[in-house]
Image 1 (cartoon, rainbow, N blue to C red):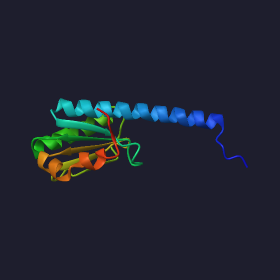
Image 2: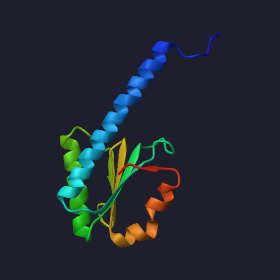
Image 3: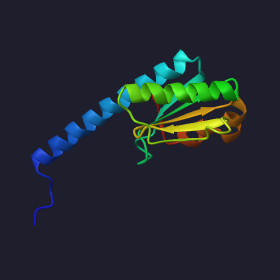
Image 4: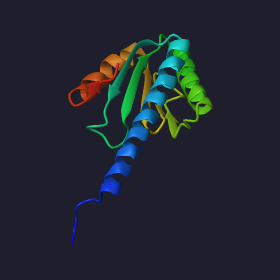
Length: 133
């Protein structure tokens, strides 16, 4: 029995990976614009595709107050929907100290600076991830 993939299989999976990579970049662009529109602070994008099968990238940004964090998260979700990236889930809206928006390819964390410093997600993910921006 031959277990080697056929050339057509590897070409189609390579095309699929290229298309997915373009979707990730498009989603990151929408997220970054949405965050900048509402004046997010300290935006960090990280490529986690090599260490996670949950998402390809994460974005971490800070807001100056719970109201600002909520406005940032709402704008990201709204702009993502307009661009065709439907949020799978949004968590933390009630307290608005840390709101997570799951867009499938990209997971966005919008946090107050105190929560961001305490949980230090950048250090947790940075060990195996490459910085996107």
